[in-house]
Length: 197
Image (cartoon, rainbow, N blue to C red; front, side, top):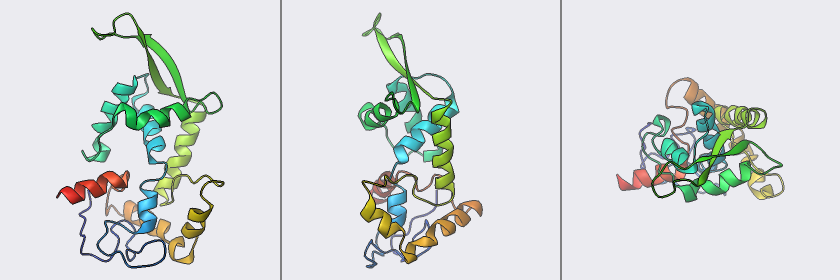
């Protein structure tokens, strides 16, 4: 993971001055406003799809949370629980979405023997398509997904002149190996890990 210097006025993610949404200085922050939003918005949905596509088998919500927590791409900075991922799973398994397909299997644990538990696997038609779209946006340095109706104000900020070139700077840094692909994913967890140190 890239080293975070809280005394460096430049954002380690994009290389631009650390500023908030109004352009005010925030030199002591971990990253600038744009990179904070990029590292927080829709990241959970993207990473759930990423992990399910990677393992390519049905898993329970508890198994998925454990796999995500121990995923090497996140380098130990995140802890996922059932409660943390449940809402995203519910949204992606809705009949009109079907990014993730829900199934059933027998519960093998002693406490729940005989009962069936829900399992989840990526939908090969819609889920993989959305994952590819999300990853393409992430790799290009963009915010993964902004809902047009709910994020008009944020979209206006992101599209300001001072933010237009940031995706290109981010893409170049990743391509040049200055930091790994997901080093600034789940930015709130990254901020907590920096605060602890």
